[in-house]
Length: 76
Image 1 (spheres, rainbow, N blue to C red):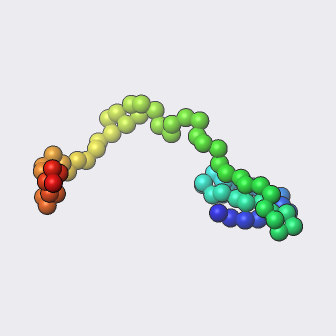
Image 2: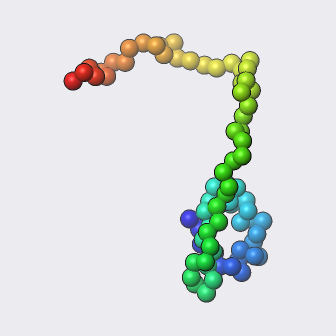
Image 3: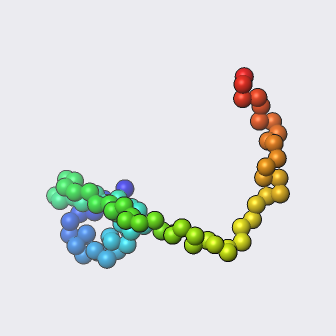
């Protein structure tokens, strides 16, 4: 969590916005005291749409459905 004073936020607003987009949280201070917290708003929609991976080759291990070794008995 980054901390900046109000004057620095005003002088560097484009960079502050970029940091917020990347997920950083910013505490704004005035006269050395925290006065506000800024964070990115949650996404309004999913980043992908249903069916968007149709036709994209996917890899799956040949032993995907094989029993796990040394897993132990779950009834113990």
